[in-house]
Image 1 (cartoon, rainbow, N blue to C red):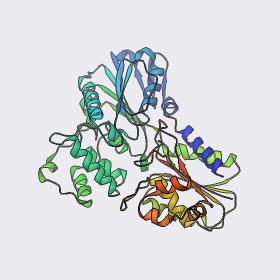
Image 2: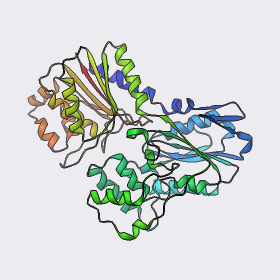
Image 3: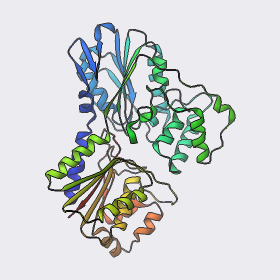
Image 4: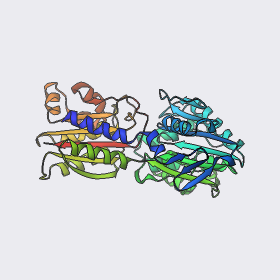
Length: 415
């Protein structure tokens, strides 16, 4: 069953391949670039540059360069350390993730300058995927990178969800919330976006560098106050981004495609599949309890329960772990003694919180192994220490960076 869970996850990853996602939405016949329902006559542009950021952005940029050939004149994309791609004209700038660093800030300012220098005969293709918020740090005037980083870390530890986090980020940035596209006017801007957020809201993915911001400064202030920040009054006078023109944004990939592929593979392996949702959010241990309750129903077996989305963890302990590892540990505790079951959860980007694991996998024997080692699973859960629990009993899933990011995939297999 563990082998089956890994095969199902690999099918989900394949469906989330960023290059294929781009090529499903772009075609080029040598004269016209078709993006969704729009066509761009290449003769109308002197320069076509690719800019952007994210965990999947290197592969996305590579797909655009291969498609356009020598019509692509260059560009710059911020990527996490270790992410590479074969590119001739587009430059990759490695930067810190999930904690922004000065390399990311330097690259972000260079990308902003490319946008500002673009003219009416320029086309900017902006590739954005999950991770772009951290990889494009360009703090607003009067705010240091260290201060912005501290705010982000505190919000993450407090359990803020991605919508809340990116609402705040947009109003602390010179690039996010549509400001990158605004800087590029009067150039044309084509945004290619892979979703890593619940609901696939374009203005939230990567904090929406090319998308008009639907949130206000007051929304950001309310979120900061919710999590115990003191908000200075003068910050609330920050202006909003004007309505954007000459901008097209295309959603090219999402969690739904990954879960659909996972469901197909599970059926091929002989399982009866139930997809709970591709928009699951909330505390990881609460989501685990919900999945356990569903699994305990009388179901025709063998059964595969799938869900996607992204949970959060409110850190109260001193341990190490991520939302996927915490989900698996909490679900294993809840399903202890309920018969043969395999529990899997991992991030499609190959990273789970501040760890080197993508997630974890457990089965009906995991807690028995823990007992033999004298480990208390509940104590590890209470200390937010799921990483060290699975390190002791076995079960960490380590894929390394996958080059894509469409949130998480959760799999429960019941025989």
